[in-house]
Length: 233
Image (cartoon, rainbow, N blue to C red; front, side, top):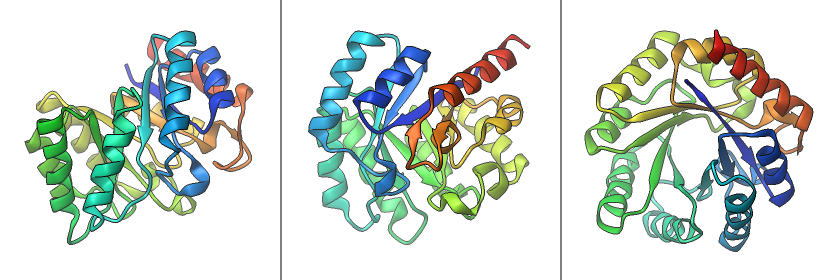
């Protein structure tokens, strides 16, 4: 069953997501970019709150938008976010000349320091297969596709259905858990359920206004009802 991941920006939104029963809560600041990061001290406070009010929820946080060339900064941020007590640390990898080197560094942090890193592979121009293959070969337990430009259409519009099916199947084949995100809409749920990733990420679809707006309890409840209905079907 595909789980719903919802991104929240502060303690108030985290409480809304927890009260709604969101199974996977992601911490980020959308006004700072696709993977805009919160201050680690803020992340730590929200994590402590969620461990009390939603102990069953999986909690992740992003490290912020960094170029692949900023290796030292990426490593430092991964360590700082991991120290807040989140279950997963999401680090973006944009296709380009330094992307494979960054992915190897993230793998080293995972293996040598035990950091719970989830590579988020940017798929604005389609599934980046070289990065997908490298991440799966490295043995990451979770792997995610996402988009940076949220105005250019959803991930489902940017990637061919057959490619997304291949990504999910390739992940499952090595027992990795695949995730899909990127301007996804509530009405995308039937297609997402058919693809059956481990989780699907939402922000703008559950906000009043755009993704930088306020989390809407009504929209969130509607999305969760839709996902529950698909699971029962």
